[in-house]
Length: 402
Ligand SMILES: Cc1ncc(COP(=O)(O)O)c(C=O)c1O
Image 1 (tube, rainbow, N blue to C red):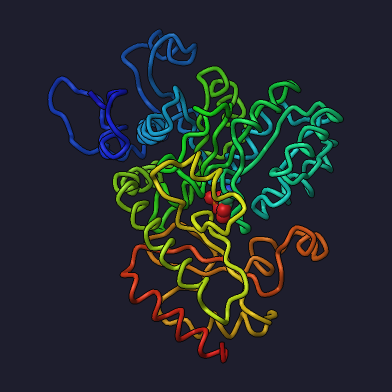
Image 2 (image 1 turned 180 degrees about the vertical axis):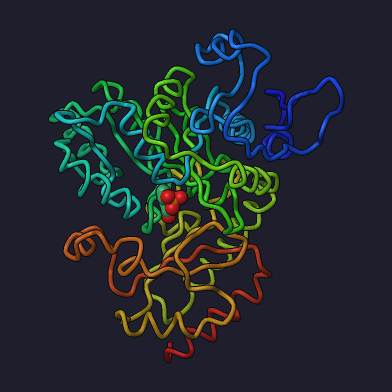
């Protein structure tokens, strides 16, 4: 038995996606299956697998047992029927949008401060493919309503916790708006993970994770997972089969291994981030701290409603007083423990400068309009000892004279 619906998240994280029973022996850990193709006892059996009337695998682009184990595990954690893994979070987002109908002549409404590459995918690629794209402030429900009423989009796309402004999406109300206008509601829940919230239980139709981040958790694997219904998964698999953005079995195995400790890591990420946020709020060299766990955050009450006791995640952003690019670079270079590098969700703490990395593709005026200032930095708070993290921040801010 790989999982039971009554098991709690921590138990499911450890057990879901375990190997299937074999008649002779049973490995306790999911094996890596590198085989690209498979033999069957008869051509008739192979034909049945192709037809989908018999369980099995025919070719790596159509599916792989190690990848299936990861998919089952993520679906279990999200309490949904089906998941499909991809070579990256971006491959997952693109396939999900294509599957729900983002094709020439259709429209998509998306949150304006989504991850930079997702913004570029919509703005630079999909628009050239004749998809009408409208970016809106997803926290302004009237604006979302107006855009959906105007465009009747095939998809509404938002992030549970936005990047880098850490806004929290009102998932049930956005789902309601999307559905009233016939749109599929897609949620990128990379920052939240099922540890904080399960958007599919709040009305979302599709949940997307960059598994590169918290799910895998150790900065050593690139991957993406879409969680949805069996029927949408089947449609998405047809897209995957012909576009080929498949996750490799070695990567799936690493991601699955990382996920076993998801709840332990997330608990520590949340605890540390809360302490860092409070410390920064009291620091005179910092003008603004964005963390949903702080009562000063505009979405604090909403996040408490959505995330319950779990916490508020491991991501925060803050603005260094009177800092432009030069000061931010000096701050990053002064860090001794935290790593200035382009990712998030790893066990170690990371810093990123949105204006020059994740949001580089977003025009400068648009960055300013949505609140991504020159002094804004984003921190992915790791699971190190809090005393060491605070000491590192203290000395790096002091190096700036703050
Ligand atoms: C919120 C979010 N979604 C999607 C992605 C894309 O994921 P990947 O880098 O695995 O393609 C990222 C990457 O940073 C992200 O932060």
